[in-house]
Amino acid sequence: MNRLSRIEGHIRGVKQMAIDERDCPDFLLQIAAIRKALDNTAKLILTDHIETCLVDAVQKGNEQEVLNDIKKALDNFIQ
Amino acid sequence: MNRLSRIEGHIRGVKQMAIDERDCPDFLLQIAAIRKALDNTAKLILTDHIETCLVDAVQKGNEQEVLNDIKKALDNFIQ
Image (cartoon, rainbow over all chains, first blue to last red; front, side):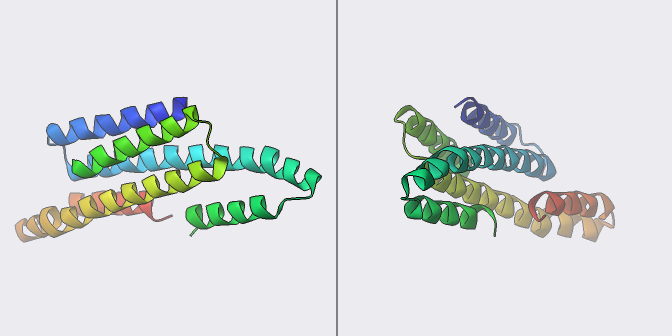
């Protein structure tokens, strides 16, 4: 939640840069930083999902759905 | 600016998902969608930067700085 709030604030900052008519490279640098922050957030959720939900599902013998979800998530983030 | 506002709203939606305690895969899907929207925004700025600022700089014979900025931007987005 804290990470998402920081990212939201970062995007508001980029909107302000548009109002201030800043140069293109400044935007690209900030957008790349936001993308990195988003990727780190996703990595945290994915790691947590693997360490808790998947381990739990394997122990209960019903891991197939969780494994499919993880494969889909990896497809979205590693292209 | 419209794209950034949509992305900002999208992030607020993901924060609401956290409050609603939604499942991990739902978050990952939404974060991947936001990342795609960010990448498309960056692509638009970069394309515009190449088509306007770079072309203009080449015509004036001072393209080196713009070329360096573009290389840095590509490094951030294509890894």
